[in-house]
Length: 343
Image (tube, rainbow, N blue to C red; front, top):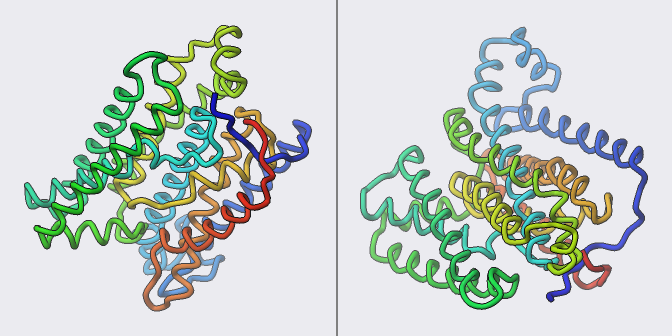
């Protein structure tokens, strides 16, 4: 059995957890307002609130509702999706360094985009988003089938090895196609940076059903994930269907990561770091851990997006780059401190 680890910390009471969750939610609301207020043109928070209730100036209402609201909502969805996907993956693989990219989902989405652009000439997000999602689904399915083959079924080690192999294969194919097709290369380079910019409400509505389905699957697996943290044998002894739980978790990861990555590109460290922060606050109980992750992950994404707009005015720095700068030092410190225990 692979010994997974989690941050060791004090286990707060249920009332304290609820209080901390409400505080985190309050921080998220503040960041949502700031996301609507800050940009090339800064809008006072009071004017933002007036625009939200339909009592603002027409130009400000158009800016808030037409330009910044879809971006903010997309940041919320992407944060929730990537954070939950990371938490579920770390639980399924019992690996504190588990990341949604481990199952080849990001590589599959990138491959789908490049194939769509190179083979069909699609340049609109509305056209190639479905290819990206199909690529993510196909890659995760192949990884799960390979990881399930042979004796013992879908073990964490076999899934990880299959994910690494498929990721390497798809990355090589993506690079090869991009090098011979300039349009595919340009589209892939923009997508690969990870950005919330340039999206409208239609994109949010297209992604929302997939994210909601993934969220429901992830939350429904919380109790089973608690049992699986004890090991497969004990989980079976407690009446858990390990294979079904792994399949449910893999489907949740696919839906969450695939939909998020297909729209905004591969934003790293959200699914890797945020579950550790949530675990430090809540302890190992996934019923609380997943709830906190759903709040903390969009806090990270929106904060990074706001920082990117401020430091590069009148332009902006992509959210994926900012998250990498925030997440990398934190994750290195997390590993070096070795404050890890079994999940």
